[in-house]
Length: 228
Figure 1 (cartoon, one colour):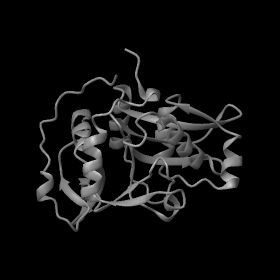
Figure 2 (cartoon, helix red, strand yellow):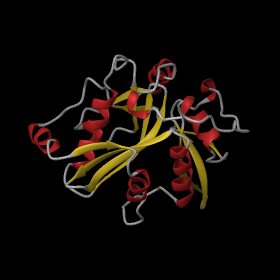
Figure 3 (tube, one colour):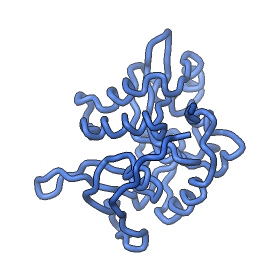
Figure 4 (tube, one colour):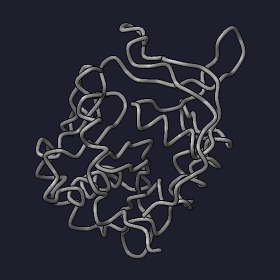
């Protein structure tokens, strides 16, 4: 099981006070493990934002949340064929996956060194995980995110080979399909055209928060259990 972090000294605004038309809910706080666990548990995730020329820590809950239903994944014939060429692994190269996702060469990159250190700490405590696609003994692509109960909050993904990140996402879906699959929540933050092609849908914020409340009470998927 994950190691419980020190409680956060910060409080997030209650749901009833969130602006119904704004994805950005709050500013400030920190990236300590206790703060991150508390944030994801109420439906928030952090990203850096620049306001009035100053970079700040923003906390987001999209008005329309991107969610991938485990029974709604779209797999093309070519992707299914490609998936057979990869091996799926979990948590064997978390730091490498995180480094690739945070590469400064990526356009629109947002994973700062502070974010990388924060999620590295989350991984060592058992809250953050990587799902990796390997081929011929080499890391070809992957993703990482935060797992709390039945929630997997995807943060970022990368590929070095064609389709490798998609294969990692399919691997995650397969690994989350257990007896609680219909209640588990695979959150991808926002729907993009790329993610929509894989079956990601938009859920209104209220619907997402209701599903989250139920998901948090589920046991972790077996693949994310951490040995004591």
